[in-house]
Amino acid sequence: MKGEEIEMPMGHLMLGLLGGIVAFALALVAGLSLGMALLLYVGAGNLGLMLSVALQFLADGARRPPRRPAPAVQPTRRLRPIPVSH
Image (cartoon, rainbow, N blue to C red; front, top):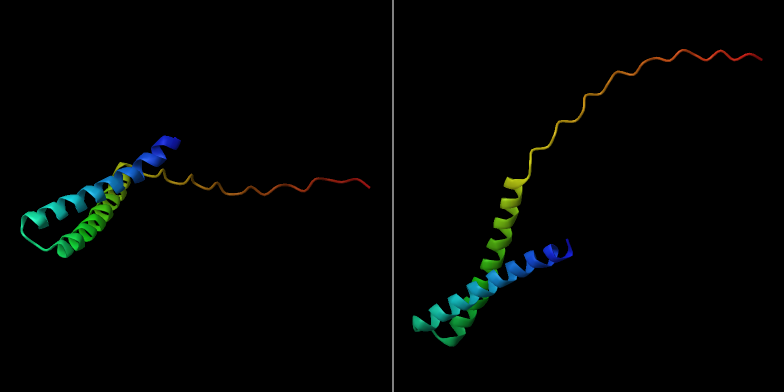
């Protein structure tokens, strides 16, 4: 269980990093300045991270089995008083 908890956030971070690197490379290929490419790296990285987390959240909600209905409450029965002899 411990390994699964670590893998999911790392996967989100890696997707964010990949999105930033791709945006940076495309910005340089398109002839943008280095400063603009760095801004795109940060922006696309954050956007990739947020989209990854949002899609994981939506996928978890879709996979979750429906909740079972609560059991019906039975009416309480009145108990007879216990006879006590003094």
